[in-house]
Length: 250
Image (cartoon, rainbow, N blue to C red; front, side, top):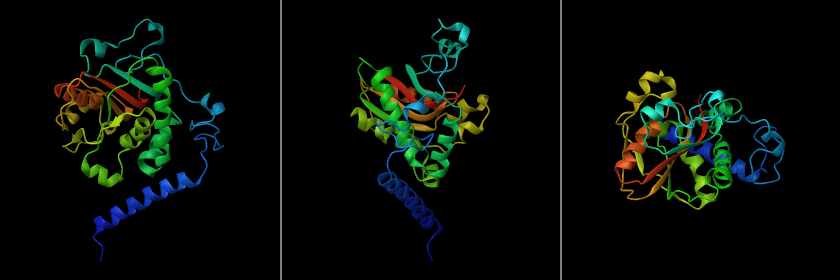
């Protein structure tokens, strides 16, 4: 009789293989309306007008700012307690349909959504966020703890980072940061508990002397995870850390 863990692993492999095969066999279709897309973008041009727009926000952590403060570029938290990362670039606010995309990706193994989000990230990076500027030296996805990785079967941050690294021709460091302590999901905790929850949860595995790092994650809530990761990277010699994410909670 198969061990229950072996059965679980085989099930995850089958799900991931099925997702990849489906993406390869079927033509690219819009994530919103389902029509075939005629360019490299995963959302057709008419539907792009229906996507939520990130409101006025802090350039360092992407926290939303009141619209009446259009001349303000930094939130009070970043002014009083600056994070290690220098800037945060987010595609969308965490609103429908982005919420549904993230849920389908993380809990229904729809990996084509990770690739679609990665494509949108790389498009914004090249055409807007870093237009005319030097790109980072390396991309590091925020890791999952091994137990959660076994449970889910994949790391959504890594799956999003793969097409970004490929499109931008940047080095993807899958193991530069390791999660060494299992923690409760940040989204399940009140804001006051999240900083303590993530403390000492990561370790950086190598030196990054003088390198510029891009941290990739799916959703930023309070930014405590990115704060902890960037703190460790700077301690290991990184010259700068930027954060790239798909969605920002308000």
